[in-house]
Image (cartoon, rainbow, N blue to C red):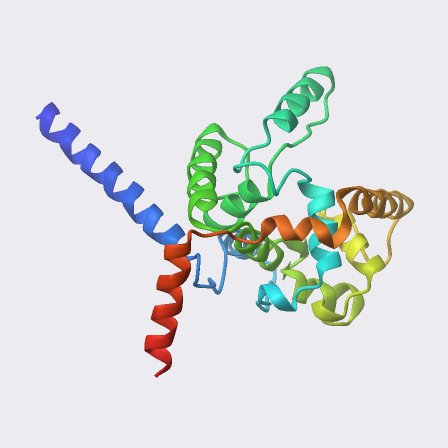
Length: 251
C-alpha cells in the first residue's frame, strides 16, 4: 500500500510539473485574459462583500512606450537584461537589510513578479517561494526578455482593480498607455511598490522624489539603448525554420 501510494503521489507530482511547463510554454504566445492576482483580488472583494471590477486591456510590446519600459526596469529590476530570473546580489542585500530592521525589503526580479502575478498567490510563504522559483526558471528558459516585460506591463497592479499599463494610464491620467509622457511613466513606476496606497496622478512628495530617482537611473542605464539587450537572439536554423513556416502559411 505505501508503495502504491508513493507511485500515485509521484505520478501526480510529475503530471503537475509537466502541465505547468506546457502552460508556461503556451503563454509565450497566448495572452491570458486574467491573472492569478486578478482572481485573488476578486475573491477577496467577494468575501468582504465589496463590489469589484478588474480592468485590463492587453497592449502588445510594440505599442508600449520605451520610456515606460525603462521606468519599470529602473524602478524594479536594473539587472533584468543580464540575470537568469534571480538577482542574487539583491537577495543578499535584502537579507542583510531585513536582519537589521523591522521593515521588509523584497528582492524579486521582474521575472519572479511575473511568475507570482500570473500563476500564484501573493501572501509570503515558503511553498509560494518554491513554486515561484520553479515558474521563474521555466519562464526565463522559454520566454524572451521582451515577452517577460510585456507580460509584466500587462499584469502589474497599478491601483484598485487596475491591472496593466493601459488601465493604469486611463485610471491615473485619462489617456492611453501609448500616449503616456515620460514624467507620467516615471510616476507610474514610482508607485509600483504600493499601488493601492500611492497615487501617480496626485503624487506625494515621496512619490515625486522616487520618480526623480527613477529618471536618474534610466539615464545611467542608457535609456532606450538598454532595451536592445532584451531582443531575442536565435540560431540561424531557428530563424530559417521560422521564415519557412511563415511563408508556408501565408500562401
